[in-house]
Length: 254
Image (cartoon, rainbow, N blue to C red; front, side, top):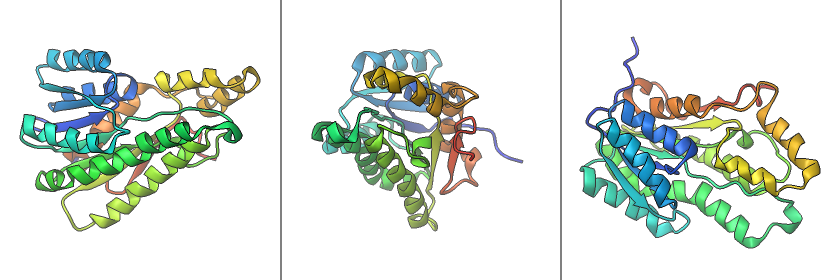
């Protein structure tokens, strides 16, 4: 019989925790017993998430850090362990999605997308590995349905999510014989701050792309994806390793 999701006495680090899926995942982890370190550049949003967690009787550490700066990835892990004494789960949720034609994409947009969506997860993982091994812990990466299908005007975003998906599998192979689980969740479109970027597209392309990303069943619910993120972080998901779970209302089914 599968054990229930339980993080009592354990610590999770969640990036992108100021809003959207990051906040939903952090709160859900607290609901199943975790103390949570919260990372984002938006400090006010982090404080709101922290308050929600403290209301549940759990501890929250607010870390307003810019993860596009590599050194901050190490700082986030070090401060988490210094505060809580351990790290049991690393949930890489933070992401940027800046749509636009490839021909006019700026170097800055490309570099920021790579740094936040692909490089930050790696450097956080690298810093966290010793602590996660000691705790028999888990890594949960949030990738996207964009890892499995081309999406017009999202070349940089698709590239990072494809990379993160395969990075998840590569790390799972690397730690096949070690007490560390590595998995990912691949959501479809959700009503988060990232979808605000759709407004940057020309009016004649915005609606068709929203339909494509959402699919006929509509957008995914943040709570559903957050539930899966939290589940994969717990021992209830002990049989999952190298898995990438699609939660996209069938968008990538065919």
